[in-house]
Image 1 (cartoon, one colour):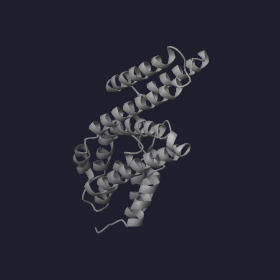
Image 2: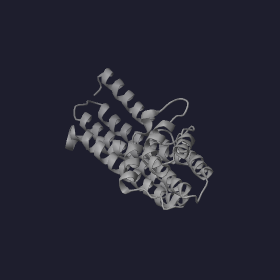
Image 3: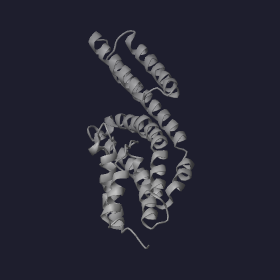
Image 4: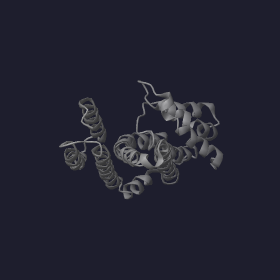
Length: 254
């Protein structure tokens, strides 16, 4: 059977995958969003009502992964559903592909995007506040989403063209290594910002406060690198820094 999908249909599926979380439920989790993303393709692949209903039903099974890397699974599902529609594979192949990648890709996405990229871009954006002012917020949104959307598109295309072969390709990206580097960057920039603030505050400080701020900022940077190496959430550092700043302001030492 010469069943194919047009480029328009394929990219409609990708666009819809951006809204994967919109249909989240406690029962199926992301399954409604997944079906919404796949529906333009499933309607084309299965003109027969009975086969189309079966396709929708199998993708209504509970589904949950990181919403960004889910693009790889959506692309891979299209890869396999094409083969199912042509009679080259069984529906069980699609279900195995989907269930085997949910967990590993969720861990990969959480580690890279939530725990590494977001804190790193956030720290750099904070460091740019003296130069950009409020525009640093725009820098954060633009920089983060440039990486996020680029990776999301690449993952979708890998799934669409390679199917199960995307696993080896994603592994070659060495995402854990880049995650570690981003966490170090976040810690280093946070330490630099703390030192800059210490100098700025120190201009108005008196007596022991100025050297204490300098030493404290240096120690905070060292502790930040150590804490992040132990895979503690970077947000712990942000909360601690905010609490210390609030305490100092209440004591009126800076």
